[in-house]
Length: 628
Image: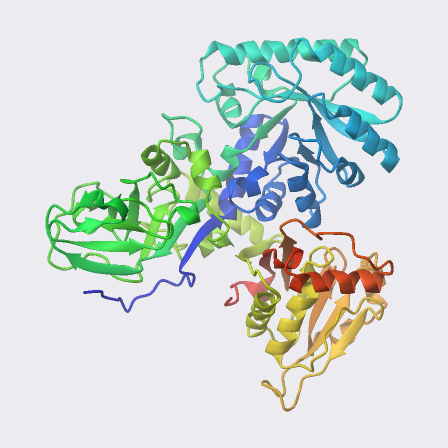
């Protein structure tokens, strides 16, 4: 018989990947310490290893990272679309790569050889030199020029630099076995890099940034006779940002890192079954005694490895193995096979279930919970894959350590955030949070949703409107056609203002009065602003928003960097499209372009693309996230 519990966790979503941005910032500071003053390139490819690229990028930069790294130019351009202006290096290209946009928008490009002519064509068209990092294949056997090809690549780059078409900012390589310290191949690769740099300098190039160290290279550099051979001018770190260990014999805590992602869900069902009951497809598992089974609504469509039978799930004070095959949407644990989450001792099964419907189930997370490495071991893979494969169907909840109240802490956890991080991480993160609170303009939390239709986008805006009041300032960021106006229409419906919200591009600002016969009579009016043609905060002051700010809800499209001075508190809403506008609009005037792009929501093509909507709160008004 299924049972429910009256005690529900404060985390509202049924399942989510909770990403602790305070952990990311802690990890960046730890990696900077190990880098000993070198430039730190924070790798946020693959949507920041599944953690959310814009959010992680902002956190990493705020903690001191100097640059960002992506595999693809499209990923770098998505960061630009999200308003991130920091240097970004992208290094994996095809003939279809958009080099023109990369050069025009200041994306640095890794050059292996074959793409050089296309990059030079883009530089000529843009009238600005491309900034490049030449890549050496020192032994990994992937992209990059081999030592035999290197002199020719260097000579071509030197000629292009003399013509003013590019600037060689860096030279880099990728290490193959740095996660196995002591293997001679790493030394051989570093020696090859030294020779390649000498060839480049002899050809007249003067790269200021030579880099080889990835996360394992950086973490093991201190054990080398000469750490500088590994550290060079810059380090390019990925896995360590997310608090995961690249070494089989060392945990994140051993390295001073804090895991950032916790994958959790609510138990969907609990039921008693007799001995011999089969579980899941193929009936590969049968209970050996009467027991209770708990159903966790996460499966391989959510990115949980299908082959990870036996992987641990933490529920309440116990840890239980996944039994039977993991299905598309769900997996099952046997409550008779549990162990104590703290002591590790086996737990005897009783007549009453130890888990109830609605209890929090954590597949992996920070210290005290099973780790991504535990799941990797069960699946026969690596922790990199476990986190990066979590699908967009699982909402990302971006929080800071003190707001991770939605994840059940292991028994004995003492910190007020409801979760401990192990080692010295809680103290470090608590101190980081106190420091963050003193820095104006820093978000305290973030919520991410994925509306797939205009109706869902309007519904999201309408839901947010329930938390708004007079005096609130909302900033909307997103490319043309992303759905900012659609979102604002939902806000207007939720506030109960007069219909007819359209983009205020040419009038700059429109005021939509509250309807006396609407759902919320007496509520605030909505002031809708388009700051696209306003270049500075001084330009914003010319439209006198201060006159209506205290009595209305003010929504500003394209407002980042221009209206923050209006209020110490604000909501920032970033709307990202999967690929951007599907085609160039037929209209030539700006009003026509906007109309064409707005119509893409309903055309069954680009308009069907899911949007990623990230809501962040800044300032004392938004110390707690709204209900979405």
